[in-house]
Length: 83
Picture 1: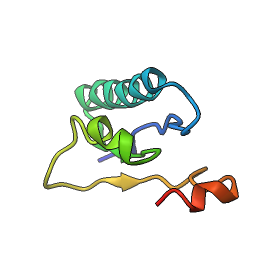
Picture 2: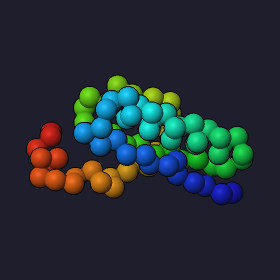
Picture 3: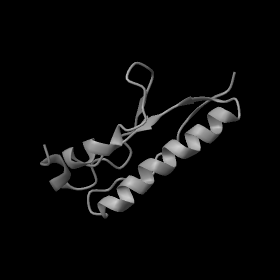
Picture 4: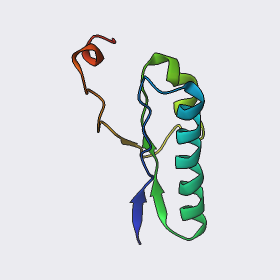
């Protein structure tokens, strides 16, 4: 069986929250379409900071396999000081 990860659209901390929600939504939507086409889909999870936690996990299974994306997570020194 073919398996694919969902697309990882950027959730940079300096883009508007509405754009972050849109990027999360379209990743889930495309994943759903791939599932309907018979492909096994592993959702990719990404977030910008703790403010994005209220939507970045929406639509994901609580008990299942998830892919955690770290591409572009730490682009500048201030990103390391976020937590």
